[in-house]
Image 1 (cartoon, rainbow, N blue to C red):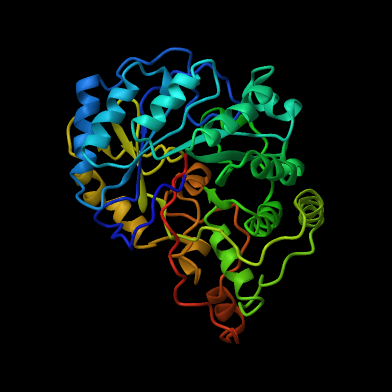
Image 2 (spheres, rainbow, N blue to C red):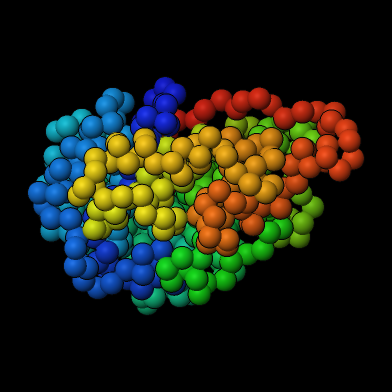
Length: 404
């Protein structure tokens, strides 16, 4: 969720985003849940005092402070959540929240978010209607509660992000979901691409070619009045770069001819009309462990919520020390990858999903199997020539955004 505009950050020294899973407790049973959340808080959850200390550790990165995202489970099920918000805001740390749509999301809770200085709020919407969304969320009637909740948050004056997880069950509805996002007045549409962890292991992912087609569709969607960004699909940035170059890149500069893309593109224009000229697609070169770090409910630190590779505990080591000194994070930040990701000319801009590489191979530095792009270096090795149009050396950075 976008919460501020800042200059370039040194991701070796500090992350842009610190996700804190304040609790695993949640009253939903989402089919793709990373955390396999439970009805009650799990033993070992950071105490109130430990939570305050973690916030101080976030401040220990120094200015500009990372954005602290309070997630879960359902962050509203943590009784002291607004006291934690107060402490962070007092320290000058930007705070965002990612609650679930349950009876806990009252007008009073929304008012507390606004008055206590929460910068942005994200909600999940995984279908364009009750059949799909409720099936994913595991609660009948959840869609009919979610859309009004989005409107209430927007109406209160909060910056609202909508999170959608792409899967076999909803991929044909993405244009319709985009229309709901636009109609509700949300500011950001953040699209998650499945990584098989937690309950997501049992959820149907789309295939490699469909990933590419969906990324091209999302570039189209970024020409409407909301920001578009992705989670665990950094290859979206490659697609955006190629599309913005208008075909000047070696391949992929034009929209694809695939049937899925064509259906989604036509449906998007039918629902939202002609696109605007400017794209709002985010291309900031962050990835799991580079600009992003995740603190679990028990204080264990991971490169990201979808990458279950323990780096240490904030109960024993300051978060800044863990982030800066971890050898695997240094390799991730240096784009020290193997396979196609290691050879790719977009390695720093994209770098592939480290979480998906780890889930597929056990190697967080391996190639991302969801990306079908063949790097220019591979063509050079095979055919002995340099592409006529080399890729750009750099892409302008976007304002910081958070994966809520």
